[in-house]
Image (tube, rainbow, N blue to C red; front, side, top):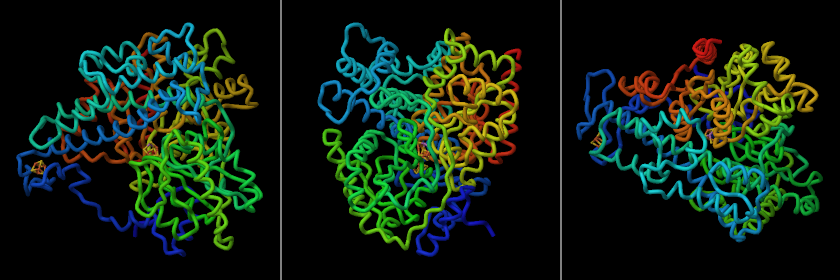
Length: 636
Ligand code: NFS
Ligand code: SF4
């Protein structure tokens, strides 16, 4: 029989019995209840685009080969995956818009709870976008940067590409994307166009649909890049900080508040107000005061900027409540399980939604507005303090499981660390070590957890293999969570798993940067929107060598991808020229045409392609081989 709980996270193993005892269903139970899952849907051969449907194509060729309207398997699979790219782009770009609108108001002096904490970064952004900085004060510059950024949601001239993507990629890649008409001119329009062309009776050509989807994916890249960069200006550019990860960061003697979701606008203020209201928490009887912990990407955001410990990543978000010691879980947007309020009800936990367009049945809603951010945050913290008073000490069960994690490696932080080795030319030591083979290549791990794989296992297995083969490792999102929880983001992991060449480089840079030892085995680059940070670093390397991204020994891997955002990210990664590993089966394999487009034809067009391999051991070997071929092509 299949094992119900699929995770290598020891905290999950420790807390699932609690769920069982309490009669609470978790994601693992619900996954079990869904088996067997629909074969048509898994293959991408189910269409619900109109109400004549649903229609499905017989994968074995015995039944219908066309939907009622005449759409065939290729059209249906291509439409489905293209819509996923649009949804992902919408998610990241709404996040970006929210930040940009807030920054615009900061520039007008309308948001007292916020400021520009990193004026230097703001200046750098302005210069990058071609805004004159001379003689400008910080607030007016913030206003101009935000306004220009919002233009990427408004421009109607198809011949003018979005500003941010133009400012973020090597010239050679931009030329290539321009020649393929793949550069988005307007994020919102690109998403809307995908919705329009995938309506019943419109675009039915799988190649044309896929290319439209790629443009949407590049709009996703544009949206996440601006989200990352403007967040740095407002909240600070991350720099290395030592913290801890996994469920043991929840403390019995504290009022524990988890921040879960993606957008840092609220969580930043909650961190601030937690300091201000700490005495109230102690007065309520919690000797350690308020303890903020992170989940998913909001967790990554506050972890890398403030060292807030990470409780867990996507698949185990329910476990935080099962400790019986979580007093509130504060939700903003994306990747939040709608099951949380039910589990919260079973304990004393306040499950609080905060965004008008992300509510959940059964949750308390505190309407967040940037104008009232401090009041909103204070109200939420008071709800947590009240909940703490209702906490039942007999039901507390916090497994003592946590690992040290050194996090906060923004592109700037990586360059700063390298500058300690060569201040004149920080990228030179990295290039030298790639050339001499100490570092064979660079791999970016991104994406989610998925019930179709064993939680965190694929990340950890592939990373260990690549590290042993001297590949420099970067991670974001729930992948970063998997590494932090699994103890692969600390110095001991470098000692234990890095190949000799990689270890020598990580040690030399770590020592020079004053860390008294090596850099961590996997560099934490942040949340999912922070995948743009890895591109910033790769672009700097490519520009320096006057090469395209696809020429460099770079790979991306999303071993446990599940969300539409992950589909968008993986697709722009391919469009930027990177071989991109997926460890879960994309829902397209019912169409050989679409499968070939993604895994083969994409390479002719973009240089990048999808490499699908669900076995992590084999995937690791394949990625090592891809890097070896990239090096050989460079004569290395
Ligand atoms: Ni990325 Fe972050 Fe996690 Fe996947 Fe969801 S939290 S934005 S989508 S599940 S990595
Ligand atoms: Fe069926 Fe065509 Fe409607 Fe899809 S669009 S549900 S294939 S009739």
